Each structure stands twice: as structure tokens, then as C-alpha cells.
Length: 163
Image (cartoon, rainbow, N blue to C red; front, side, top):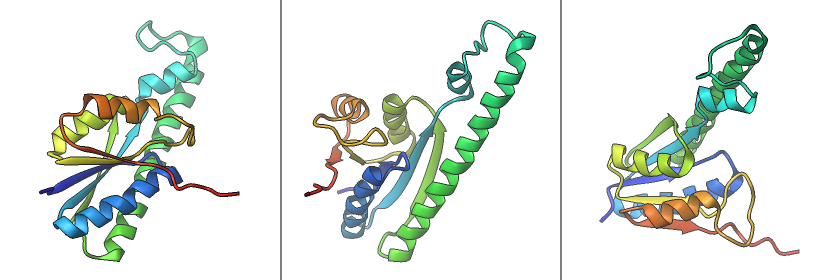
């Protein structure tokens, strides 16, 4: 039924909960897992620093721009390293025929759907919440994906923490 499972992962423990479900499905269906990490673009990072790349460069923004771009490169390296670690953990478990990774500079909701189309995913398995933590409602990203997807989406709730 499923041959390729897209698993968006933002590096959070909540996102890792979805990986467990994806592995179970992949083992049962002999499906490939594609781990996806979306990172901010250089322009988004520049905007965080208050630099408008479109408006042109002025000497006052040059240092901010260098710092913003260095942060973008660092984020990309960390994200790639985290994905490689998750990929290695899945491969060590055995039973999943193939695991691959995608690292893209795209907005989260749209980026997940675009990545699903690009890699030919049959299903998206993702957490209901990510780095912002588990609230009472779906994260904006999970909500967007579940409303706009043309393929099945399995939303994994975070584990209940009992006091």
C-alpha cells in the first residue's frame, strides 16, 4: 500500500515520536523512509537580523548580513548532522529497506507538501507538534499539512506525560 513514507523532522523529541510509527509502517509495508528537514533560507535569516536583502546593501548591514549567513550555514550543518544520526538509528534497527534524507530551504507547511510531491511519497507521518511544544491544539504546520495534503497524513500525538 505504501512504498515511500515522508517524515518531517525539526530536531525535536516530539518529531522523533513520529519516526517510531514511520519505522513500524515501513517494516510492515517494506517501504522507504524519507527524513525531511526544512531550514530557513538565507533571506529568512537575514530578515531575523533586520536586513532587507532585496532593498540593497549598505555598510551598516554588511556585518549583520555576514552574521546572518554564517548562522544559516551553521543551521544547515546541524540539521544535516541530526538527520544523518536519525538515519543511522533507523538503519541500525533493520527491517526498513531504504532510508534517505532531504534538507530543503522552504517554508514549513508548503515545504512538506512540496517535498512529498518531489520524492513521490505515498504518506506523510509527522508529529502534531514540534519545537514549540505540545499545546492543546495542532501546530499550525500540522494543521496546514493535514488540510492541504492530497495524500494520507498520519499525525502522531506526543506521548502523555503523567505527573
